[in-house]
Length: 134
Image (cartoon, rainbow, N blue to C red; front, side, top):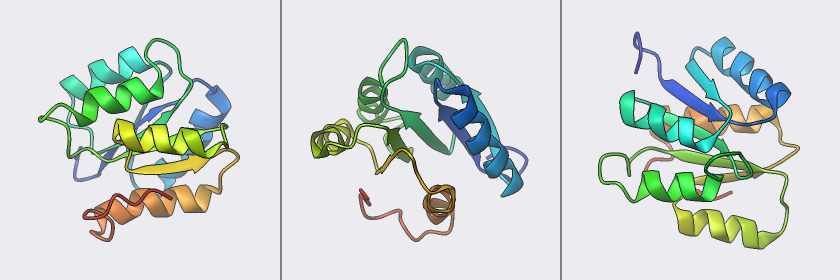
């Protein structure tokens, strides 16, 4: 938490998508950091107390699956909720994301209200126990 607000990291290489998510999260009262590649995201996670990660699967540097796996299999960060966004609609991508440790999965185009509800559920305590892949 930063200044009492949850800190959300957006890892998305599409600038418009990233900016839209960021603007909406800020409007909802979150602190937000955005970056465009997986290696930078991993660096941020290791240096800052991030509360939630939204990650696209197909990002430069370190793809979303690998970022999820590195975060979720590190005891320091395994508690960190991660939502995977992707334009890939085949169910195998959802399964890969699950195996990599993703807590939630949304396909693009996505409903912004649904994304906000998913993020919010982690801070209201309604989704902390289940894996919640949707």
